[in-house]
Image 1 (cartoon, helix red, strand yellow):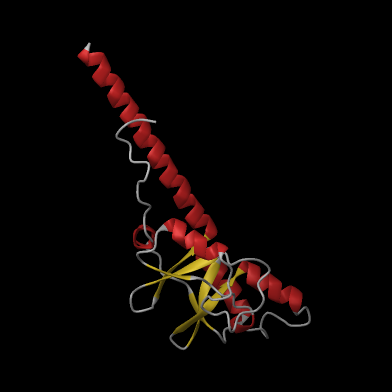
Image 2 (cartoon, helix red, strand yellow):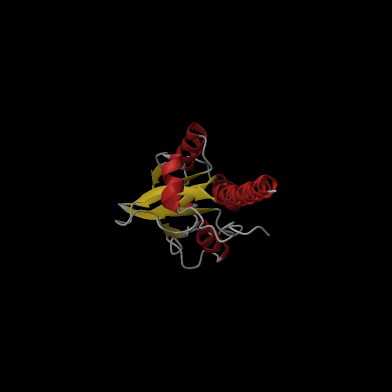
Length: 177
């Protein structure tokens, strides 16, 4: 379209998204009850929490996985089930991963993700990615919606730059006459 507009503008990385969000990751041990998990999710206003076994990430527990566990085991109470029973496998990305690459990890399925050996069968592909620092600590959980919103923002910025470049070219033509 317009000369001078960088249509290949690089996407922001997980490092930038984590910095913008600046929220502590809600975390639960694998032996926490589903009732505790539901309370944590509701209190924090989030859709998922990291589940740990010792210091290692075991996966995530989400509204979806809690509902799936309740449907799968209707005789069990939320106090009798643990987060380990409904942990979903989660793709893990580093801080320097770009948004499209993180979305591709979500689309690839959960077979090789953290927690897949302990995870309950998920009703669909994972909805979150775990962002880890170089030491392997979880610094954020980003949902598919978070990543898609970032893609929309990115495209909006490209369009804004194109419009600005068009205006500049118009002004240069008007004032050079």
